[in-house]
Amino acid sequence: MDFKLVILLLIFGAVFLTVSSSYYIFDNVMAKMRRKKLEKLAPGLERMFIDIPVHVLIIMDVALPVVFGLAGFLLLGNIYIALVFAAVGIVAPVFIMKRMAQMRREKFSGQLVDTLLILTSSLKAGLSLVQSFQVLTEEMPPPISQEFGLAVRQMQMGISLEEAMTNMRRRLKIDELDMVATAMMVARESGGDITETFGRLIYTIQERNKLTSRVNVLCVQAKMQGVLMSALPLVFMVFVKQVSPDFFDIFLKDSLGRMILAYAVVSEILGVFFILKLSKVDI
Image 1 (cartoon, helix red, strand yellow):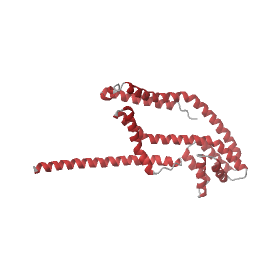
Image 2 (image 1 turned 90 degrees about the vertical axis):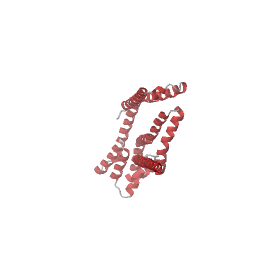
Image 3 (image 1 turned 180 degrees about the vertical axis):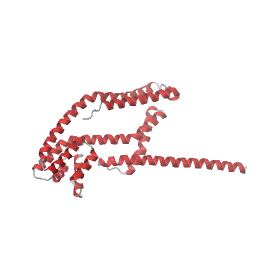
Image 4 (image 1 turned 90 degrees about the horizontal axis):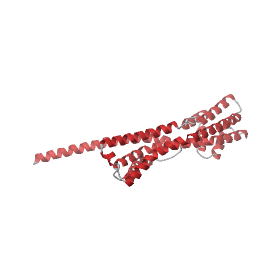
């Protein structure tokens, strides 16, 4: 009896140690993955002047997969679909941040013409370039005011105009801003009339924006096709699930059905990706 008790205790201890070590390893792996993810998110949010505490980012990173998974399970009542939704919740913050950064860059580009007009008026009034930046931060809304306000603060701390503009270009990576910064540097070095340079830049940027708008209008049809192709399978799945709850059982319970379902999902994702990729034209 004692011998059996010892054996049971040893088995229990071995199982306990195995589970504990597995949990420790899993927790370390998840912590490393979460740390890498936050290292990607935090600098991007900082570049967009969005101040979110780290503990809030951690809560969002943990909560989003749970929320998405529960939503998928409540909508479709299937654990596999819930896992897919949870996976979407894991990668959603990165895509949302990239989209926010893209929208911010587009808004910045749309404000550049007004920015150059204000700088030109300030320079003609006798202000220096740094003083013109200060006027710009007071007159323009974000994100222009944020970026040039940061450049002004950097120059007040002793950083040169060239370095401040280089930092701004590195943060935003916008072609029109590269042209503006290069024109400023060339005009300062050569001693030319920077207001005339700004006037030519205003005309160039306006023509570029017109061309970009025309190209975007021509690409709308292809983009809409990509959006519809990505939405139709989900709409069809929800509709069929409501009409015939057992319709998709063969795709989930049979091995061949699971292979066909995986092939369909991968093909759909690739099709949408290539349509959106080919409908994007860089000017």
